[in-house]
Length: 323
Image (cartoon, rainbow, N blue to C red):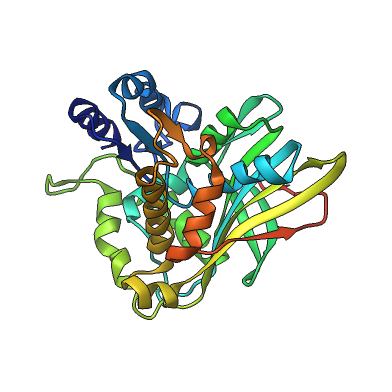
């Protein structure tokens, strides 16, 4: 819906904010290298209309991009690599469930991964690149290279040799995922049953799985999402992880949702506050990497999400190619 709403905002001269791109990142013409093309087409129009567009103001995309901008502004003179790291170490008690819309989730994680390396886009099969990372508070987890919005916007606005997005998946989750994909249950393509009924397998799966909002009561554990940046400062090699830990139980106590929803909602409100306070109110269309990170990072802890900077040993990551 992003483009329809942006057009409506343009006609009404109302500023605009979203939390992610509306494309599926899997279909031709909508994959990571083209992810923001349609929305970036509004830059001049919004500027002429005197309105502001803020794109990708969730957590990832969103806060992780602000973390990268903070690293550029305060922590590094030169950036070598940016790795966005996302793991949900919580437990919802279900054998298999998705933390947000199952259709969107399943399409996203079965698409090819795109990452930026040495001046060009690289495309690889999903779950074919893996590394293990020791996350603050939640420990070591396997994370897999995935297509994600912010890789495109970071590539546009932050010079780095490699930019990649990684998401954690447990072995049991991947076993379910691979089985369902292999038998065609993750396909969005229409299928005709023996009685003539036409269904989309992915819609059937969505109907069978728990509603993500139903997972919130009793959800325990924490998430950890952050931006791992490596480069140079004052001529010396440096490696830092800028991150947030969110607690599912705390999120439920606060807003009666699990932490995945909470970590999307709080950044959107934080970004909106910067607009209304005049900090992020320039006319035009902007991704989070283009905006001053300081007022955003000052505000976000006040309304629910803190952030930290952890110094890491220089080196890595130790990426394993699985297939």
